[in-house]
Structure formats: structure tokens, C-alpha cells
Image (cartoon, rainbow, N blue to C red):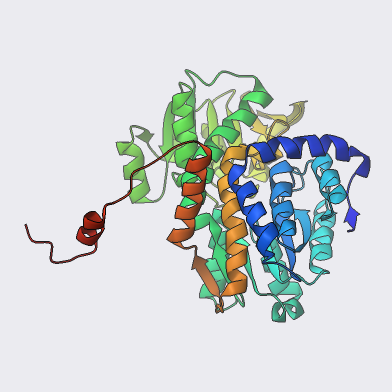
Length: 417
């Protein structure tokens, strides 16, 4: 075990946090026990680029229990929890990264993970996968495949495959039911508002909240905002999603129209320049801007700074931009992923990540048991069902089963009248 972290002496506090999340991640704990017996990763090295916090450390420990040598680094310099990385190192994981890395240090840590020549990669945003293809292609021969857990990362990988540049099979964990129906929706919705409310100490009820993007993350944010008493407006470019938002009861309009009413704007599209250029002219005084997309490109900070006559850090993770006409616009967490990079960002609740990381663990196992060509692969519905049944069992929930006659009826085309 080797590491390059902030302070190994922070491990005791990190271990307390890991024990807490383990208690709230029963599905992953069940899979961990299974892995301890079967050792599916014996002799395998798994490299990961994830948000380094207690829940992801628990995923690393699950893979370690299956026999893997696990190497971990962070996918966002501001989301790493230094006590968690210290605990991970103490528990035998190879840990690289600390809070507040420079961009140069970030890529140094990615390369340190790749120095282990991993057999499997688990990624969040596809930075590790992309780096292998672009700068370290010699590692492709040994690499069995990868798992990707974000919408942003899947978009990048599908583009690579379309252009003939993807040389490995990748499991699209993000596209599994147990990921996007729960992680993207309930996880992002809750963790986004947890961080914003902790950072600003402002009330959501009665505010006009604009949600840019109505994918699964946007749906979750809109739903949670409505639940907190907000007046929710959705902006979209996809006509089907826009129609869905309208029928879900939200107002739908172009970004510039929405900005005129917004008290809080949350971007969640996975694309760049959602708020940029002339958009800032329409924002009303006192508006808060936050991003829940993976990269800090959705709110164009450079454009905002150019139009401002002054900028000031008025509070941790709150920067005030004074415009020429006297309006003040507030940017949260530097436009980075607010639910993890913000001061009060803890990421999704453990009960939610229990499902996503269970899917990661089982998808990594699949890469070893099947001969798969380069491409982006959907996870199996049977794996989603297995995880759902395990979760229901841990919650004490029982459900019905089809009778033999019902099974026969559902699988027959000649059902009669």
C-alpha cells in the first residue's frame, strides 16, 4: 500500500465516517461478503477516479475484499475529503489526492494511478479513460475494460466510440435503472439543495428556482425544489423533455426569459455555456448561480467576470460579482459541482450510493467474465433487479411474485380473449 495524501494522521476521523456509511449501505455490504468468499478480482488491479469521500472508499474496500489491488484518486480537486483518504490508506488502499489540488497536481495523481497498469478502471467523468487513450495507449493491451458512472462521461465515451477512438469495452453504469432512477434523481436532488442551503442559509420556499436541463438530474432537482416550496421553472433544448417538464407541472421557457425571474439558478445539463455571454444581462439583482453538472463549464465564469466591475469572496464558496448597473450576482462553489465541491457538499446520501456502487462492483466483475469488444455497454436488467431485491430486503419490504399461469400469459403471444 502506497499513498500521496494530505495527512495520514487524519485516518481515525475518516474511519468513523466510513463505519457510519457502511451501516447505511447494506446492499454493498452484502456484495462485499459475497466477494470475500468468491474472490472474483484475485490478481486484478483496479484503478479508480472518483469523488474521494467515505462512500467511495467503501466501494474500494468492497473491491479489495474481492481480491483486487485498489488504487484510487479523485475526480474533482474540491470534493476530496482528506480524512477519508487517510482512512483508506490505513485500510490498505493505494490513495492519491487531497483537497484543493492544482490542475497540474490533479493530472499527476491520475498518472500515478495509471502507473499501476490497472486491469479495470472505474471512472467518474471519463478523465482516466481519456488519459489512457490519449497519452498512455501502451496500457490498453492489459486493460480489460472500464465502468463509467456519470452522464457527462457516457456522452464523452459514446463520442469516442462513434469516432472509432474507443479501444476498450465500457460499462455504462450511469445508464442503469438503479443509477439514474435513484442516484441522478433522488441523490442529486437532495444533495444539491443540502449544499446550497448550507452554504447560503437561505430559504427555498417562495423562491423562484430555475433548473437548466430536465434529464434525470434536472428532474430530481426540480422535484426537490418543488417539495421545498419553490416556484420551479425549467429550461430545455430537447422538445420531449420540455414537454415532460410542462406536464409535470413546471413552467418551461428559454433561459433568458427564466433568468429575469430567477432567485436561484441550477444548471444540470452536462454541456457548456448554459449561462454565458448576454445571458448575464438578464439576471436580476441578488440571484444565486449554482452548477450540478460534472464540469465547471456550464456557467461561464470568464464571461461573468468580464461583465462585472468588481468581484469579491463574501463567504466560503460564495463569490459576489457587481455588474455595471449595480446588480450583484452570486456564484456558488466557483461554478463547480455544488453538491460535492461546495463547503457543505457531502455528495449523495449513503443509502443512494449503496445502489450505484453495488452496480459498479457487479459491472466490474462482468468485465472479467465476458469477452467484450470495444464499445459502451448497457448493464443487464437482471443486475438491476438483483440490486433492487437486495435493497428491498434490507428495508424489510416484501413484494408479490407472478403465478405460473401469469408467467405463461405474459410470455405468450396467443393469449386468446
